[in-house]
Amino acid sequence: MPAVTVSARGEQRIRSGHPWIYRTDVVDVDAAGGDVVDVIGPRHRRIGHALFSDRSQIPIRMLTVGDAIADDTLIRARLERAMAMRASLHIDATAYRLVHGEGDLLPSLVVDRYGDYLVVQALTQGMDRLMPVVIEALVALAAPAGILARNDPKVRGLEGLEQKVEVLHGTIPESVVVREGPVEYDVDLRRGQKTGLFLDQRENRHAAAQYARGRLLDCFSYHGGFALLLARHCPEAEAIDISADAVARIRANAERNNVGHLQAREANVFDELRRLERAGSRYDTIVLDPPAFAKNKASIPNALAGYKEINLRALRLLSPGGHLVTCSCSYNVSEEMFAAVLHEASVDSHTPVTIVEKRMQGRDHPVLVGVPETYYLKCFILRRVE
Ligand code: SAH
Image 1 (tube, protein in one colour):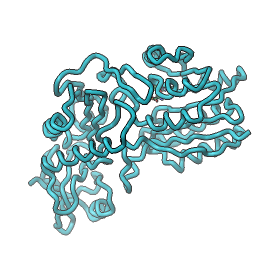
Image 2 (tube, helix red, strand yellow):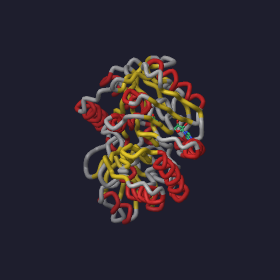
Image 3 (cartoon, helix red, strand yellow):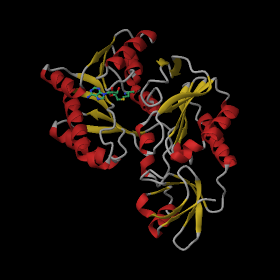
Image 4 (cartoon, helix red, strand yellow):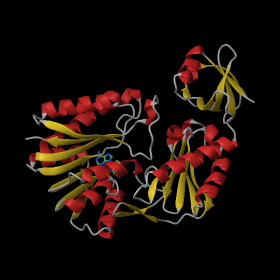
């Protein structure tokens, strides 16, 4: 079997439960990009099996530690376990994540279910090479009407892999209707962001709905994820997104879901929050669900400034007794960092708030303990006390 030797520090990382080894800890390579390799420690001890990439900053992603063999049977068994876990959650939706990469011990693989269809992403050379095994297993386990590969993320380019969207099994219609609780969405699996929808917020939307009342402002709404559900509890509801396409989708979804009072408009949230403040507007329920501001470590300071700005402005617009649902999906911004930003925003806006709920990505996006990179989505529900 092809082999990669790692440094003592690399071995230590694996022994402490982290599945990634960085380029600087790779000592010797006798393998080609995409191989499943033997990982060897500095004292020639076999540590386990891994996916190997010859382009990535993370060349090694462990599949097994110890004697277990990383073969097709293991991949099938892990897919089966990942699907059984979702079945056990009794998710009240027809769209959810079936496989969440490292969180399901299937590094760099994403599988999302949208009704009868599956969308897959293989984000490293090694997982890309395993796709025939993965697809065969998914067909056997889930009998989908179609499987679409959304292999267009930028990281594939960094891996030296082609960025492409292709049907790998059956057929994929132009749009698919899925349901999340009482809300129906029309999804374009080929062109939507991520794999079509932001499935990771499902449980946070339902949590937020418990507090929603009065006037609602949903910022960074995309296709209306929060707005469509929360508007059922709010007699006045507004959704904002910078993308014209997203706003058109919110409007169509509002009609489909009989929440005709939901007003969607195209605007930059940063400008809009300032404008609303100048106009003296007040809201009882505000949602902030921006895109990841910190895509890497270097952008953390700017990201924190961005989070502070929108949270400060939103708190100024919040009525006493009202709720702010505020999220960060940057894994480079930890929960502690985000909490500190919220603290500053509360102090600077002279708005005393309590933490009603501290939440994260939905349970179908499991966090692997010891792997902070798998905990990316933070969601605080704050209440303005007075
Ligand atoms: N809340 C959504 C997901 C939001 S994704 C849901 O529950 O499904 C982030 C969205 O923010 C994208 O739709 C993107 O178009 C939008 N966006 C990014 N920058 C923005 C800005 N400055 N102002 C308004 N919208 C923005």
